[in-house]
Image (cartoon, rainbow, N blue to C red; front, side, top):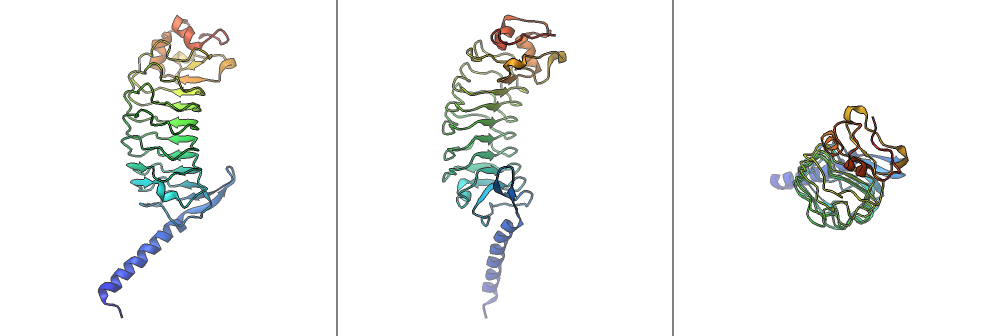
Length: 281
């Protein structure tokens, strides 16, 4: 018979192992028929660690609304087919880029407590990155350079006050960029230079009053619309709706003029070439 102290330790070890297995078992495992991937739904389970007993062929892992304060890519190495990872609403303070996740296409880190942009190396296939509603204040130079395939980047609801000119260097495939609801007071000339595929830029909810001359590329026709149209009478031609820039009412009014019938030179430049309708009431 084991001494009481050793018996107690043995019981603790058994409970710990059982708890780890139970975390994986509590996750709802089912096929996501839309994406054709096996999905593990582990939301709202009060998890403080990443489950380690999920099926090896899991392609979608939902870990939102738990208590994961710190996560490393090493926790997902046993899931080689993982393509979508949702870590939102966790109070997450750090995300460590250790071993690469070569197949990961979507990473959602929104609604957490990240005070800085996490390292993003080892994610070569990433297409969508959600960083909304954190406390990120700065974007280091070249922070996204390793994400050459990224198409969607959501940075809304952070604390960004300024952006370096090369903040988005290397993102030639980026189509959708959301910078709304930050504290941006100005935008550097050349910020969009490398964003050759950009379709949508969202800027409402910042402190912007104007943008630099020639800030927007000249070799395309861009319709610009306010997310909150001035007097409900701002519209652009549907013939040139490939690119959309959501500026917010204050910035829109300062650029184009408060009156919807105002067609300032800047307003015409914003709307692009004669292929597009000008602002009309």
